[in-house]
Amino acid sequence: MADTILFYIFAAFVLGGGVLTVTRRNSVHSALWLIVSLLGTAGLFLLRQAEFLFAVQIILYIGGVVLLILFVVMLVNLDETARLRQFNKAWWVALACAVVVGIEIWYVLNRGLETLEPGEAPQTAATIEGNTERLADVLFSEYLLPFEIASLLLLVAIVGSVVMAKKRI
Amino acid sequence: MLHPITNAHFLVLSAALLLIGTIGVLTRRNMVVILMSIELILNAVNINLVTFSRHFGDVHGQIFAIFVITVAAAETAVGLGILIALFRNRETVLADEVDLLKW
Image (cartoon, chains in turn red, blue):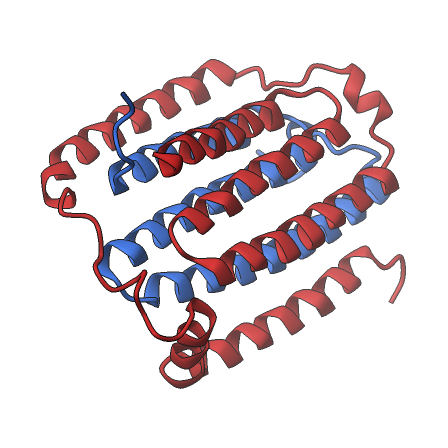
């Protein structure tokens, strides 16, 4: 019962925040609504017993990515942009494409729902070790190489963004 | 009386979030907002991955979500770097005014 109410609260966070992120004129407002949406997602992770991802979502997304976006919004002068037209001329094409994709997803979901029904995975709640230990166990044994490659990717991204943003190298 | 929450609820929610993000990417002119919409799309993917991780009762989906978050962070950093370079050269952040390579 509490789960159901919490799910709908977080869903309202996610969808309302998402819609307002996309529609706000001011970029700072967009970024703040993005925080609301990401917080809702973090709550949904908690409802699905992904505690580590909940923490990662808040620390990395809200603390890192949104902060970065806000920095750039402050750095780049967006005042004139806020006064201009906010949507493409071809926005109705985009909307039609999105509606088609939505119908497609809805169709696929409806077809697959019966196989999805048994749902509740039995062992998640009653495991001996916590979510973080299990994640670390799998990440550092089975996924060790992808983990190292991800660190390489982050290094490349850091160097790349510095090179991009620097005036003269 | 409210129904208990199933995995299907999460899937429908993530599909809706994906569509909102798609509409944002396709229709907005401001590149900062386009980057934020990409974050929304990646979040929808993460909700899906975590839901299926719970559905199958193992943590591999959550590992994938961690990698998605890593790639999202890298993508945002590089995208914002490009944005700053672009603003320095062209004085604009509107996506449809950057058409140097377009016919």
